[in-house]
Length: 362
Ligand SMILES: Cc1cc2nc3c(=O)[nH]c(=O)nc-3n(C[C@H](O)[C@H](O)[C@H](O)COP(=O)(O)O)c2cc1C
Image (cartoon, rainbow, N blue to C red; front, side, top):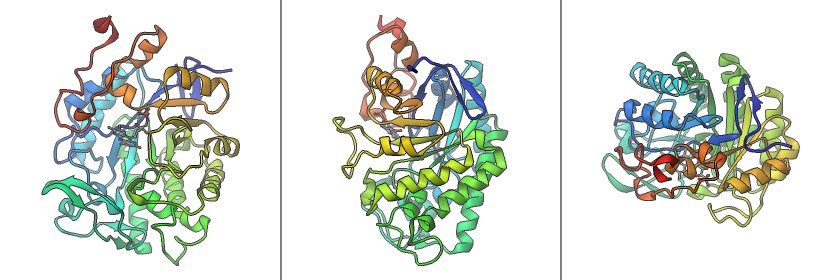
């Protein structure tokens, strides 16, 4: 029976605990997506996590549509990530980089007026801040040709190789939350009639091509993937999430990945707009490797989930924003500091690197 403090072997790594830091976009990179010393300090402060999963990091300019979010597609960005990896390792931690292509969620304002891409020319609901203003509504994207799909698979490979070369410990493929991979997986957006659309295995093809290519490039023990089967973010939905995501994890079984990461809120925890079904127990039964789960967990909730064998590790998001020493606070049963959502996506030190440690809190 495991607890949050039971060590775990995960892919190529031995980790001292099962308290992982969930990926958290914090918008502290510059407008060119280059990570900086402030970000290195932030991640180093959180190095006692069993594993840090970095904020979503764009694999290409075309995939980057969030103000001041980082990329890993230029040499300058890679050098920034090297500084972060070194800072985390110096404190004894490990860090995977979450790799991201936002697809149709990228506003043309980020692309000098060019249209974003997706599986199909279907607009997602919502708006984001862009360099030209707030609440800029998403547009109808261009459906990718098969040739361009192959280029994007290579963008994921290139970013993975850059991550490993920069000293990061692995990558997490962001297949959740309505971004490009999810725009292929779920059928409210994917309306293709070629080998990337229609039947579940076709809709999963893009994801699995990326998984296979990235595993071949850096080794499957350094690769995780994140899925969010039931959140209906940006209006993206699937008509049968059970069939789609059971098939996804069955197919993922063949890759011997470091882990599969499921973001889903347990019933009773009101967090995300979800379609009702809680699929994690079924996905746990179908997936043979390490399962990481996330979504509103407290220390007690995480420990219970591990004791009940609902997962192998727990990712904590917001608790890590405001408690850099979350692991120590859990260990010594210290109260937690609440995060300030007003500074989640602001661009400076306040609300980022200035949360106190428990010895300061007392
Ligand atoms: C400020 C903020 C930024 C986030 N950024 C990301 C991200 O970059 N990638 C991702 O997959 N999820 C992202 N999420 C979702 C979190 O990883 C996590 O799933 C969510 O906060 C629920 O976990 P929690 O209840 O432990 O906070 C973000 C959430 C927040 C609050």
